[in-house]
Image 1: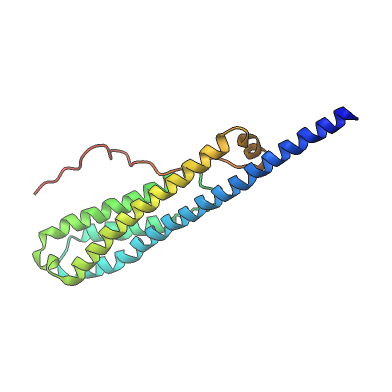
Image 2: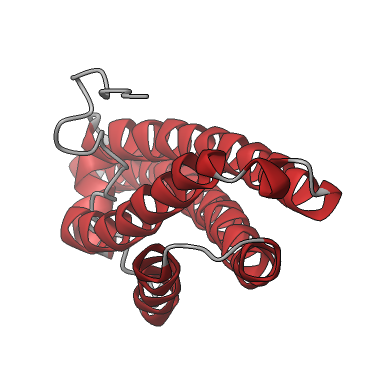
Length: 192
């Protein structure tokens, strides 16, 4: 009888510890999903600004058509990738990041090429949109940093003992985080 009570007591303690771990993991998982929503919101903001920027550039200059087509195509590719917040694994994040990176590169070329057209730079609509896109790029960076911090906290939590046991039992898997783009360690060339 005494051994049965001891075994029952140990089981209750393990369940209490596991229950606390489980609730913490659920909370951290929801935080990751919320941070992912903020990342998507900022990318959507950028995507919404692009048609206005392209229309302003088209109206103000006889612009390089290939650059405008490239921006429009990159936007279409970037907005076509939908990520399920319950499946934020590293491969999915990398695919999403690649599409968004192509859009960022195309936007950079658009903004650099626009410097060839002084009448475009003096257009207040263009300068306002350019400032909005620069601000949005900064917001995207902050949202990605917040997301990565939430993912780090979550992944650390599910890999720590004894929570790792609860995580495996209830199917809590590691989340993917944003990484630097290939070649980001090299300074870009600027030629005038």
